[in-house]
Length: 247
Image (cartoon, rainbow, N blue to C red):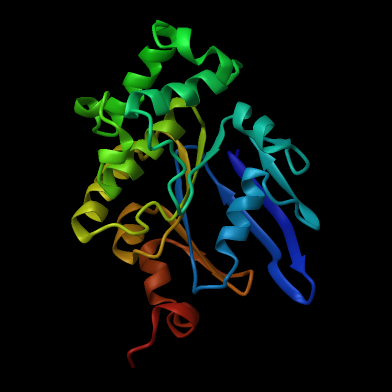
């Protein structure tokens, strides 16, 4: 059974159809990339999957249950977690404190418990574990404002993992990174393959072809192809619409 299943999803903004009767599936443990030119509707799609934007029609199923009308918070508690193109972290806090806030939120506490929470093993333990998984074990007490952009993206991923998700919605995790940082993030995501369902929106095609089990190509809100990296590379419609035809 699919972990995530999308059926006939539609989102319109006036005369613009951002999502056009879109069908999509992610199996447990699968990394499914969504690629397409700018304006194809990728971020709009991710926002609908996360619950930030309501579709005009269609359905979204998670683990067999209809979550189309559920709020972001409810989906997060089910195990749907997303990252953003722009980092959403607290620069005045340390790496550990940022991840502890995520753990705290998933345990149902409010931020007013922050001060005494610093000594709670129920928060620090999962936070440290998440930071170790993304390679930031040596930066627990480092202020985020002192961290490089690539390290901040790693931190954001640690915050996503701290919520114990089943599905990761990753919106351009390599955005703004140097080539070295992109390679490091690719290796990090490779280490997570098979442990989570992953929807990956990314412009770095080297990373996409290395990470994705399947790739869906989105053009004007509609899927024009879905397949393995080899199938997508060889698809003439994809080459004409997006990858570029050198013939």
